[in-house]
Image 1: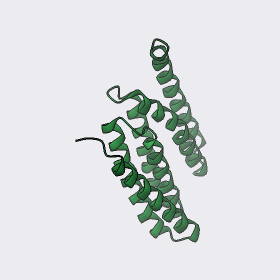
Image 2: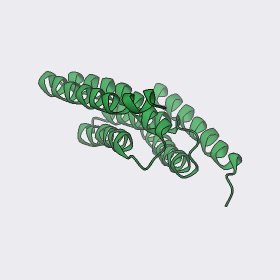
Image 3: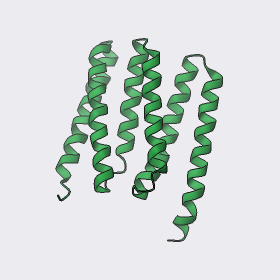
Length: 162
């Protein structure tokens, strides 16, 4: 089956619409409505990411996924569901790290995942600081910094030899 750019564009447009709806609900204090919109945004971001992996296009899809997880986690904090918020942030972090190390995916996607690691690491760091868990925030951030350094040290020699 040939690549159909309209499918990805449809996922992306709907992801944007659900993200905007979630943001508006969050600002209005309608946290349960925001929860529904953000969960739909994550599902759409997962479809975008699946398409990106399969079609070897749209490596930026990982950023939509990370942003969707972050939005949901922020909303869950407002609902004081800290455990699920933490699980959601960890899910984003795990997905990013898995993509970075998955050598069967195209290099652009893996590099975008490494870039996304910076954003998700900062969000996880801020999350733990808000909960008063400074030591955990520092450990997670340091670990992710090491992962990024190791990834780029392994990938850089191959980039130079091309």
